[in-house]
Image 1 (cartoon, rainbow, N blue to C red):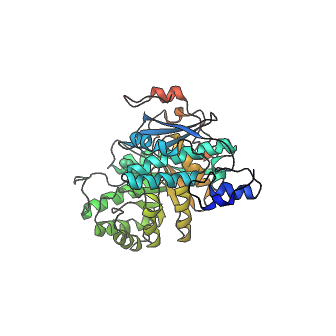
Image 2 (image 1 turned 180 degrees about the vertical axis):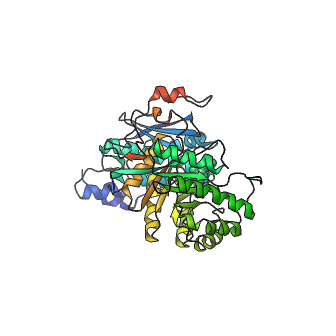
Image 3 (image 1 turned 30 degrees about the vertical axis):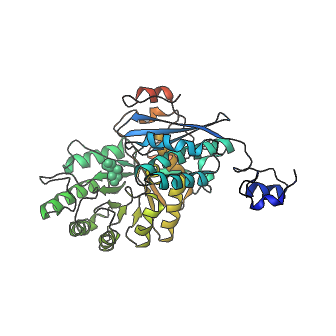
Length: 410
Ligand SMILES: O=C(O)[C@@H](O)[C@H](O)[C@H](O)CO
Ligand SMILES: [Mg+2]
């Protein structure tokens, strides 16, 4: 077909600029590289895990379906429903453009903050699964290929007696010896006779000593066989955070996480630069724009984006690239089902500065029943070579564990 160049500047023209230039080159191309696939529908459902895992499916007219996962949050399903018309009829291979399209539309129509980004993340992850299946490549290939064949997983550990150093040490030994992990995390904001849920909390010396006793017990029990991190859930004052981080220096912990809230980058930087204890931050920060100043300000030693919350797989890859320029490794926060956990593993495989991916469900018993594949083995995830994410939902298992009132995909 010849080209009518008079249409080049006509907004009602029959062709897009891209089609025109493709025509010029003699290539019959459309957006999406000429593969004629269109998004027809998007659906969500919710599984009652140790968090309400929100699974997202993107359907196409080719019959190929992509599965993703959004971080749990009130209203995610409604937000996905609201964004569906933005994507219907589009080519799912244009992942960046479609993600940007959702960002732009939601910026105008509502709030882009928080839960909207998690809804976008769920769709973005599903688009990677879908694109991989259409192109018949594993998802890591869409991100630039592999640095490694397996991804290290760290186990987020809990005990009945969270404030008891001996119980923590026993659990650490069990998780290392019986479950095979060589990387763990324990909570350190556990109550010890003092109010827990207060921000900007001053820690008395006795509390700092109590936390140090947990760290000492755990690192003595497994420290020569495992890396151990400790999480504070953003509640301490800057002064207390500094005193705690300094007190822990002798134990060489893997990292101390969220000792102060992440929003004030100056305070974050002050705490991080005051100590040789590595400080990890990131699970509550949205998009690359949110993570940018933490990195540029040298306010973190390790960055911890959460894939189904931060914006998805490409967004995490971009954050990892930015982090790499500051010599900052990435330890992906993850409390998700096997779907987003596997998405994190693909990203972790494809970036140079990948430290580990979190696993938060070892006590649940049926986490990996949700998919047909084995996901974590002996503390590592083998990166699948199947097209897309390489996990297949077991729909019977998903149905068995649905949140009350949730419906399975059609
Ligand atoms: O790093 C972690 O795994 C924790 O910060 C969890 O995300 C938090 O307890 C969820 O509410
Ligand atoms: Mg945390």
